[in-house]
Length: 451
Image (cartoon, rainbow, N blue to C red; front, side, top):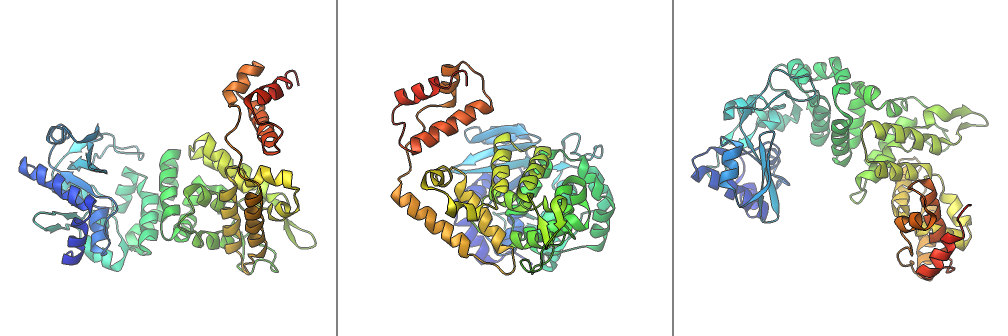
């Protein structure tokens, strides 16, 4: 399965392809072996122009730095050097071999090796693909092209050993299966089942990186289904796994239980839904498992608030920055407010429609509806129309008259929730036209001393 002349030509015609060719050319001229490797080669075999191109070489990091002394974006880190060409940056990594000593979090050290050893230490056959842009040679020592044709995820070597060596390979296997919309080799499947609990070895940040890649991929629902089936989800995100089997009112949710609703939501992602919106969509109903009750019908009273609290806890374990957790939690806590917006007075609408996160909240509301059968967008459409009419009649105010630092200086207080409350009060007074100058804003804050 050689690369087609068409994809080669189309790739090399791009600035990124041209720059990656130049890097290999410079390393070759300096006496080193160098190849495009991994995902870029896999994408070209699928007749796709690669978005990123990684390069593996026999040159050591110091030698790479010498060859590209004028083009370094970043020096050596774990055997990789970042080289900048034009607007593109490339990872140029020295061939290396697996370090057998590992705690499962990551290899203990970087051991440089040959191209053959470099191929053996890669995780899946579809990633151990090397292509030389000058000679046009394809190096495929583990029949990765054949597996790619079958959309097969297969570990190189003994799957159990590979997972115990680096537990990140657990979620990576799930991610690549969803990326290809493919299937697992039986031995790979069994090892993922047996060693699923090793996902807890990973730091929260490494779990987070893989989760984000899954959510941004083409089939996030397949990834989440696999994480649940292998019980990885129960280990590192139990807030989500408990949603399986939680029934919903049949009159309003023909799609099935809470988990099925979540899967429909994930299948409804749109291109402009950024990762924070997708995360909010993933967690928006996780509180239903705790708030389920059977009254006149199935109910989930206050589930939005409970879901927000559970999302905060989960995102905290995944080591998200505090500000992002606050934003995602805010969206989840308010995703059931659609009816309220239409009943608000104009002065209160200003608080919401001018809110910096409101448009993302609306995207979450859309996804919640899209994940429901039957989907009724009538109220959603009315909110969009009402917001547009409001914004047309009330131009967005200029930037805040005072900063948080200025408020702290005026009141002689430190940072905290009180500063946020006063900023919100100032903002709403500015929206109502009661404050128009910094002098008026300072006087407003002065009057709050001692309150």
